[in-house]
Image (cartoon, rainbow, N blue to C red):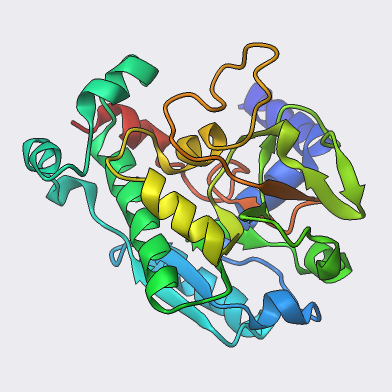
Length: 272
């Protein structure tokens, strides 16, 4: 017991954010304030949520309300266990041969379901003729202070995707364009929160079916690469190229990777 208490005390001292997030996660609470960044406050928001994930839904709704998001809506996620791989392949919605080629394994039903859900939102953005929208996953944790500090006019007009959150291979990220805006050179993964233009939605709608990659895998592979040196994933297994930039400091966190909520990653490797 003494050793466990000592270990917990050291963790609290060395990584106070981790302890804070675990406490907040237990309480299902995340502190946010009203957005003063009008572009991102008034943008349409599509939040992907499993109807069974009521705690996540409640937290996302509370954040949206307190931030003053006027066009926030939930988008029911496709449930992986409801899918049948054979049917998906027949309908041209999933390519198992290509998935094995690029990942060394079949995608899990969870990965396929998430990817198809993102693809459905791309089509929704196009059908509604939206100029831009924000796509979220329901474990998003907003950082309004950073969003409010962002000068939205600094986001290049040619953007297809502007990541509000990204896992990085280097911090701060490479390729600073202006305060809060960087090239996507340091992007590794994340589809938890991103602003997408109509042009970006059109590109991703074309490139997302049949599903070959997880949602963040498709985004990462679609990022540009000059081809002068090898890269582990960029421009491999995709037919599109995105003009993408990322926000740093980020405008959101991924609750599943910052010890706020339990990650669904283990499910990915056990779903069949």
